[in-house]
Image (cartoon, rainbow, N blue to C red):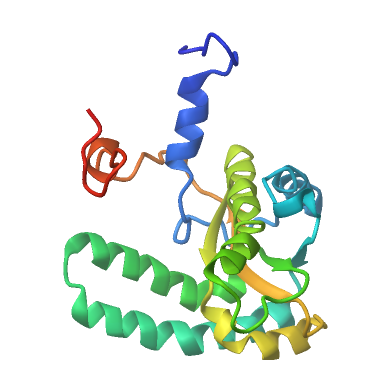
Length: 220
């Protein structure tokens, strides 16, 4: 156990959680329902993520109605299939192929996923806003989505962050009764995952992607 001397956290456990929480698609259990109580626990955790001004303007929706999932799946597939097919033609390496294949699986089975969790934020960023305004807006909600995924992973629940449906945001809003003033941020496909053999994905080391004080100046 690598317990941190100041925080007392078990770094082996926290680092394993952070490095093995992945986008789960093929390993979602499509047969086992996910209780609302478990998802609410994850949302409670997510609500503690950083947000601008500490304003609680993030909202969530759990969608497990079969007809609504099926309709969202139609919109999702209408965008996802051609997008993934185009990427298949230009990205031929093995690693990319596995990711695309996994994403296509979700396109074909989204309607079977036990629950969809929709992340939303009140209001919309005005057209023509500055880069800082956009960064502040998204930066106040996206950390909560990742916190949800971490909390879900620790409970044996897998999730996949998706955005294909946003090309049909207005239609999905009408389907779910969401006001036009509310921004849909992303859709999480959620279900218990099968097995527990997740390992960290290959990533370039920090020393290769981190600079010190100036562009491309190495950290010694």
